[in-house]
Image (cartoon, rainbow, N blue to C red; front, side, top):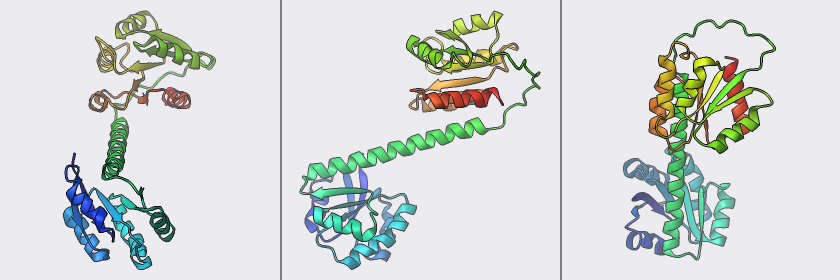
Length: 277
């Protein structure tokens, strides 16, 4: 994809390279070092990144970037500096390390493209993951139907957990982590899980979201449709790349989710939180 780059600085050679050799990746615009000019160009050009091409910059010019940085941060625009090791070092010392990415010369034009593209791609991926996690949290926080009052359980009874996952290694790993604290049963798919629940009970189901033939959402729908299992707490085991499916499945009101690979401390935390709610 093409990124918008706002350029400034005294290194005209590097700036010219953006216009002559990097046009396939970057839509470039130059600005002065004046605060008002930079703010104006940020408002109307809406750059993805601000690049300062250093070449023996004056201390006055370098200091101005610290003021501009506040505005750029507010607009979620990272600051990149390109220059010699000496110029970059002086810039970082004078501005208290305001640069988000430092590219030291000598470096080829292709190298500059690769560094900036990789940086922006990683930034966008993190933004997507943060947005995904926020949507999941919002979905889980939505008001749910009031649950019936539960009868107090026998104090000495160990809690029971049913783990449903098509990966035998995942079943084995979770069982090994939990068996000292809970009674554990496992099922390789939703059909086996439903068969188990015909004659036995459980306190919590850890349910893999992505399974062949019948995924976790379909299994959860069956659980909610059955009067004997409709109130069972369910926690999805899922991967962050399954965004659209998980958001849709949250309408079924699972009690939580865990991202794979499973973190042991988070596993125990969500189990305790769910069972004690």
